[in-house]
Length: 167
Ligand code: SF4
Ligand code: SF4
Image 1 (cartoon, rainbow, N blue to C red):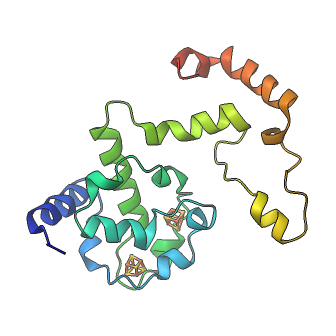
Image 2 (image 1 turned 180 degrees about the vertical axis):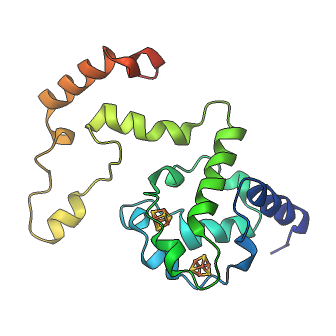
Image 3 (image 1 turned 90 degrees about the vertical axis):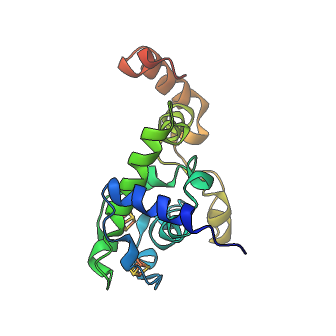
């Protein structure tokens, strides 16, 4: 693989400029990923994985990924990191980069579309795991209840969010 040093330098300096000052301290130990609720909820591009892409200069390749909006801002990653990288700050720096670079960020719209379509701002399909542990595949929530979804959509369409013209 050819290392594009200029691309890497630009990516690192962009993220540092947006607040991820300690990104170069990362040794990719994975401690942050092991305690991240965002990753466990199905948003893979947080903590070590996100930092690896950034340190490889792959800003453009991941710009549309919505994982940064799955960060719970719990700071568990910051507490456990042995190198003072402050991964949450890196996630937020990447989110700022996404919001700044994209005229209308598709990644930021994901949670709003989820809310409209399922009644949950953060939604990942639980059916496989539910089946694995012997539970019915569908959950008793608005995501699988057409009447509830219709009511939620009526509320959104007629409330302040409806004025955004997203739905
Ligand atoms: S950010 Fe810290 S905890 Fe996470 S992989 Fe890098 S050094 Fe390890
Ligand atoms: S602050 Fe965000 S990135 Fe860090 S552990 Fe919590 S959810 Fe994961």
